[in-house]
Image 1 (cartoon, rainbow, N blue to C red):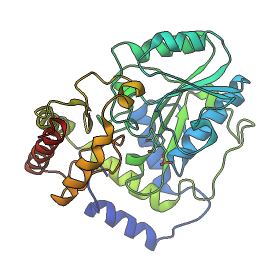
Image 2 (image 1 turned 90 degrees about the vertical axis):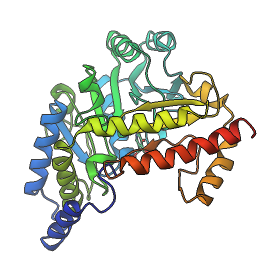
Image 3 (image 1 turned 90 degrees about the horizontal axis):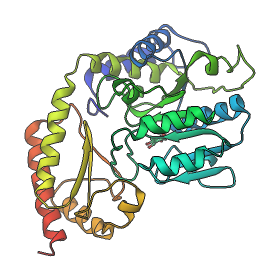
Length: 337
Ligand SMILES: Cc1ncc(COP(=O)(O)O)c(C=O)c1O
């Protein structure tokens, strides 16, 4: 909820929309405006609107299999794309370490994968930043191997700036997914990409994908209003507040990873660059930390591997005060004080 809960303008749009019909099984004006706004800000040729990030990545992966006529998927250890079969290692899904172009090369050179899917900044194993040049290298390797490069921006899209991550970093993924922010708090997600791949989807092509509630009026109204409001926001304020939070947590002497609007800390002093680093941190200390923060009136995610998100509704004072309290407690637990 990057604008905070119950933003009055978003609530107003949802109410107005509800009074004018919530389900037609046909496009409405807001859907077209929403699509145009996403197209302009993302640079994607074509998009499809679905209900959840799970659906978006599922269909992007199904489409990659359809398009390449290959059957296997490559993903990142600790990467999360929703609860469908392609999210879990199996005979048709292999996993490699994040931030290792070498591992990516070894796997992609086999030329057996329809797609490699990854979050540009990992957000489901705590926050893990890509090393400089890593994403570009994987993209090149994928393209040389005839594998589609899918960027899952369900978390990062419109969070670090009013743009997807790939666009600000000049990457060219073949397919992209968005969720969370773009639905303004209601169920909505997107997959999209270049015309030659997206044209495989019916009615132009033979790839079947549909959904009764896809692009339902309430979600589209909430998403459109959220994006229109976000467009005018100063993301440097979000950046500043994330830096304030990270600085406070750094005082505890643990490892902190952050990008604009998202951060996490790990009970270790070593760098955290992949899931192996997360697993070798002392994450069993997290529950103790979570409970004592709850006692102090700060409600955090209950799992050590969830990221913390800063919104435009937070004030600098709230951020500074809560993160300095958190840092004190992290330090107490970490140093066994
Ligand atoms: C990167 C990423 N992809 C996909 C998903 C799945 O989205 P949803 O929960 O809307 O199905 C999530 C959810 O947390 C996510 O973080």
